[in-house]
Image 1 (cartoon, rainbow, N blue to C red):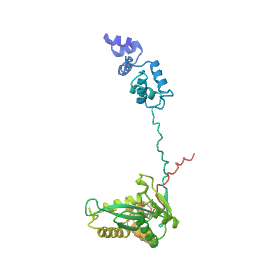
Image 2 (image 1 turned 90 degrees about the vertical axis):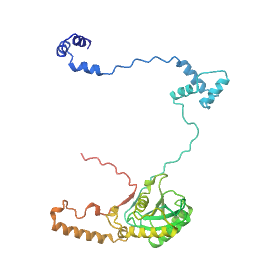
Image 3 (image 1 turned 30 degrees about the horizontal axis):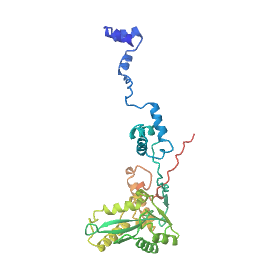
Image 4 (image 1 turned 180 degrees about the vertical axis):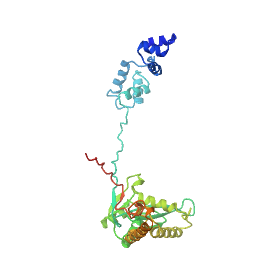
Length: 332
């Protein structure tokens, strides 16, 4: 490479220099673009020698200092008339040996199992939660207790009270189970009312399985959270309620509209009431007949042979945290 550069600096063309040295012309450009290694940095004048570092290790791991923090060990060594280095130096030496860590006993919580619940028809899994409704003045709120059937999205019950209480939650459940049916599973988050003795005793007496979300994981109760957003983002939802009676009346009216008039995308654009009470079969058949008649009249407007589009199909299963399906290996 040096011969190539000497030829080019004396006026020889790059093509001739390449022919004389046997190096391609691009090799010189690559060599010039290659970063030059940084020169070795000299050791700082205040750096400890290996013997001094070993002396710190021996002192800090001795029987009288091994259980002390580096700052406390520094003070003890000074009182003994020994200076081996600063506190930060002690930390650096210990860090190099991976000896800087928390040595006190820490609270360890077992990982919570992820709830995995499935419903294939109404009445199998109910989920419930409590949301706050703004009252007439700042600091005044009303608590709306809402229970949902996850398969049909039907609101099986809603109560609005002045406070949150496990006793009130149990009373709501007794009313709901008497009017509908006792589900297999009742799911909720880990609020004080959800984990109260009143609710636990009631569900145990009815042989209903209690299921709870993991701590601080709102996605474990998605149906309740989604319904609260649907209600509070409604154009009719007020900024605040003048009194408890107004909050109760609004929630009653909204739930009635939601159950009987709202065409829910998650259940094939049926209303929750139709799915909950089994009327969706007749509705599906009417839709199929209308679409088939339209297909016969205008076949050019339909690109698929499917009678019902995907948006109108009711799912076979509804999950809370569906397990991941194992990847299928392609056949050889």
